[in-house]
Each structure stands twice: as C-alpha cells, then as structure tokens.
Length: 338
Image (cartoon, rainbow, N blue to C red):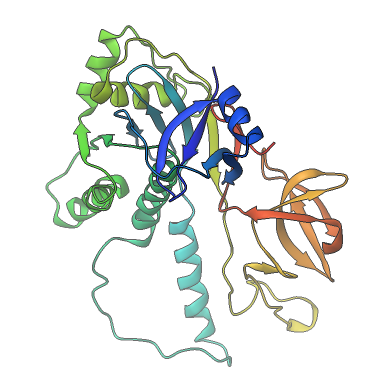
C-alpha cells in the first residue's frame, strides 16, 4: 500500500496517509497538492497539528552509496538509496593546478598567499556529510521523524599522526554530522556489528554488490537501524527511490583549454537563459526533464533517470517550469511527480 506524506497548514509534518485518503482530502478541498524534490505530498488547509506516532529514520552511510529508511512501528514509508558526493576532491585539485598555472602566464590572478592552516573539515569530507544532512533535512520536512539511527563509522588507524588526522572522509566528519542532525531529532548510533546482529536475528540477507539497485544492498541495513528504534519484524515495503546529486559547475575564470587563437571562453555558472540549472521542466517532446547548460541562445535538457543529455538546442519558450532540483530521483517508494 502506497502512503503519501502529509504536512499541516503551518508546515509541520504529520502522519502519512494512503493514496485514497489523500485524493479524498484533495477532492473535498481540505488539502492541496504539493511536490518536494519530485515527491508528491499534500498540505492540509484546515489543520496545523495532529497526533503523531514514533517515526524513525535509519541511515546507513557509505563511501559510494548510502541507504535511508523512514518507518513507524508497522509501516515502512520510504526507502532511499543515494549516491554519495565523490567529485569534490578532484575538483579542488584541478582548481589548485589551474591557479598555479595562471601565475606563470601574463594573466590577471590573485597574489599567492602565505601558507596557513586550513582548519576544520577537508572540502571533500565536508561535502559528503553536507549531502547526508541535506537528505536528512528533506526527509524530516515530509515525515514526523522522532529519532535518527545512524550506523557509526569506524576506520582503522595506523598510529601515524598525519594519517590518523584524516584517515577517512566518513570518520572525520561524523561528529559534525551528529551535532547538526541532533538539532532536528535525537540521534542514536549503532556499530556495524550491532547492525549485522540485528539483521541476522530478523533473518534478513545483505547482498555483496554494493552498486546494485536492490533493497539488500544498503536499504536492508537502514531498515534494520530504523526498526531498532520503533520496532518491526519484516520489511513490508522494499520499493526504493534512487537519488543522485546533480553536479553544478560553478563560475570559473575561463575554460581549462583554449580554443583557436588562444582564446579561453568563459566557463561555468548556474543560470541558463533565465532558468536555474537543475530546474524541472516539461517539454512537448521529452516530457519531464531538467535544465542543463546553454549555448547560442538555446538550452540543453537532461534525463531524470540517468542524467544523459536528451537535446541541446531547445527554446526556453517550449519549456514549462515546475521547480528547481538539486538532485534527480527515480524509482518507487513514494508518489512522484512523474
């Protein structure tokens, strides 16, 4: 049975309802249709508060993929398998190399600064944990989450000062993530051994292929973590919604390689002829897709399923704007805009 998230008139998430109940409330004018990052939900017009049951969100973090499950004691509302943000380290290295190369050319550039301590989290580690926090806040805006249960990450140390200080991008930022997450709802942590013990006790199997789009890859652990807080014997919903973050190329000084004549064209930016890149639009031919780059007064459109470019010469007048996306979603597990 499919469940639709419900938000009160004041914006507070309430207990989800069935699809039939949601349609009935909309027909009677008691609720309005809304969408959040591709997920359909309803907003009540005549009620701001309501009785909510304990709802837990289990989080199984990983270096490439991660799982999220939102469930109550009897019902699993949503399973999410998300791709991790993995490109920041390479992007920072390219930026550093290009800045060094510009200092060898007769081109405007900022002066070299003295070496200074960076402090805090490395950019790649912070980007990974910020992505997890964005997903958690998104889920908390749709469901009345009362507790987060996270699998605590442990990484092996070598006794070397430099290595131990940054031996794992997941280990370095977990305490920052727990502190931020605790501002939304209380946080419980479980070790990997605890997760395995609970999974074996429920006779659930985890597959070895981490990249597989399967409930047993990551969501089985997130489901077990959530059930440890609110209860549950067997997964009643194994549908998965797959989430992939969109990569936006911020404005750079110029392209990495020059064109004919040694001219380096401008590169990057997040605007495409009035559309914010990542905006969900509807095209007469390509239906629902999102906006990419721009060239010669036209924009490109990309697929919501795999991100591939569908076309590159579309007029803006042919597209109907819906809302801006910062990630693309596909699959089941919740009612979608498609």
